Image (cartoon, rainbow over all chains, first blue to last red; front, side, top):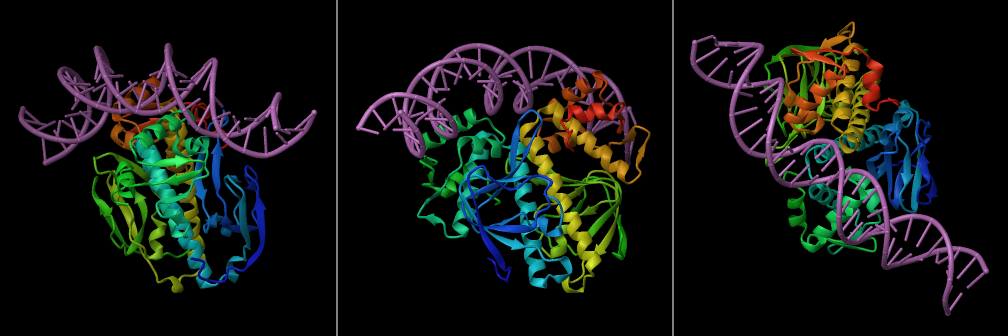
Amino acid sequence: MLDFALAPEDRVHFRPHQYLVREAELPQAVFRIEEGWACRFRLMNDGRRQITGLFLPGELCEPQWAAGQRAAQPVVALTNVRASRIDIMARNERSPEQRRYLWKALTAAVEWQADWLVTLGRKNALERIAHLLCDIYDRMSRCGLTYGQQCAMPLTQMDLADLTGLTPVHVNRTLQGMRSDGLIELQSRWLRIPDLPALRRAACLMTN
Amino acid sequence: MLDFALAPEDRVHFRPHQYLVREAELPQAVFRIEEGWACRFRLMNDGRRQITGLFLPGELCEPQWAAGQRAAQPVVALTNVRASRIDIMARNERSPEQRRYLWKALTAAVEWQADWLVTLGRKNALERIAHLLCDIYDRMSRCGLTYGQQCAMPLTQMDLADLTGLTPVHVNRTLQGMRSDGLIELQSRWLRIPDLPALRRAACLMTN
DNA sequence: CGGTTCCTTGACCAGTTTCAATGCCCGTGG
DNA sequence: CCACGGGCATTGAAACTGGTCAAGGAACCG
């Protein structure tokens, strides 16, 4: 993954609900998440909240900072997080490999967000949650954090609601339904997917 | 806007519903839209459609192609479109200015999509449509295409529905309501916004 | 003109939200 | 060791937003 020397300056950690970066801050570094989960989100005046990005172990947190721009959205830890600070070099000191890597991370963010726009715009509760759980499972497996058909899933139902654009109550009911249909097993922050293709079908993820 | 020499190779045009790029195609160029509107979208198996990006005059269409990747989503003309093909240079032949420009376009796409995730995830019909119309008006004014409080708005109600994640019928009813509240005047593909701050308020766009 | 495409309207229905209350789990402190 | 408190999950009932189906009308184009 990290196929070039982004010299990790130092290790940092964060507790749940602690900010990695606040809104409009000028970040000095990008983070590579070593362990734990974080998200970026936007808050409306009346308190409605939407999570617009999820950061899992092994992933780069906010490549767009590398342009030296202000963070448009805060990033907060969802669990305990251990991360590497990677100092941002001046643009003209970057190697071609570094540029390519940052570019790739940014285009991946565009793709993920486009998928997610479809999910929020056009899918119902079951399809949204199924999509999210498939996504999580895939990303966890990509860095070797799945065990058999299982992986960690530390998000609360409120987190799930803020990701899927639903209410926590409806997330709860939908999860119940998925459990009783045998689509998932989810308990004590641990997810098991007995039949991944079935879950992907439920998420309308055939092309994906 | 186009502050460096992206030598426009040639001019092309497209009729409504004509594809600028098909899915999984390897684009040879990025486009700069000179006139007309286009969008990128994703189609679900059962026909549900979600527009994930809108391209207005003066805007760069799909900077991520510059990485030489396949188009993850098709791009189609919504009106008659006149555009400049800008051939994609090999990565290592690009000037720093070119790189900076492409990076800026890509981070702008990430920001727009994040805003749109909030809208699709957390806003109701009125707020969604108000947001969209504000966005359109802002972008049109940015390239001098607004006249007083007016600008072109060639999208059909079905297009609006596919952007906002609603049904055409509900878009229609919501527009009626906005008209009778005096929030907008919209007829024969022409939009007038009597009170932009009021519309922004209706869209919950205070921070924005 | 004739045929599309787009807009409009009505009646009914379904998925999701809201409000409110209860219970569970777990860490902390007496 | 047990009581307390806070965060999280669960459940029910009622209300509402937006979706579906269906039909009619207006505008536009060759």
